[in-house]
Length: 230
View (tube, rainbow, N blue to C red):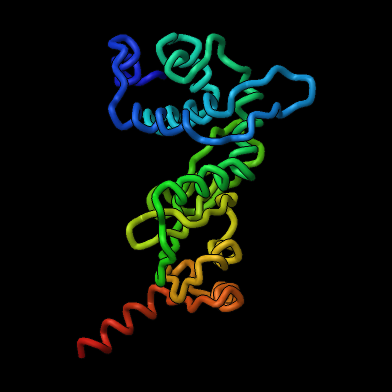
């Protein structure tokens, strides 16, 4: 089912200023425009990235629903840069490319544009990404907000201001403590990383130490706070 807010925006041809600014930023990105499959027509990765942000902005549940919305509403096709809607399989391949390569390219350019300097303290956490029931790669797992859900988890390492320095995707059944976020942080010379109880494990502490980072878990933070105030 297509939500009323999606229909309202499509019929009024109004684009939210935040979405408009994001699309303008995507237009000036340097993304490698190469086809996913040899011999296939070139489809702009920038246009596909706009579609993924559109999916997130309107809380569209699946790629199938995204394709349906793009098919039904020419306005959304135009603002994303398409005359015709790519096949569902193209979006699936694009999603895989962005997860494995593209978002790192996007993030590196964003950090450069923002002029981010070396932070001393970072924060790690995860969020649930629910998938379509048709997604054969997704797995069932537990998350505080959704309890049992099918999908993935996005693990982020950010500065205290919320700027993402590194990320990792994992299936929902993979424990937070097994995800490697630290190796890509070596260039930043970070001193401390803060995380909640899900990350507070020997494995995470060892991975952090190998990168020269001291990890502080949720319970340790609470204990330090209590000891300081007793």
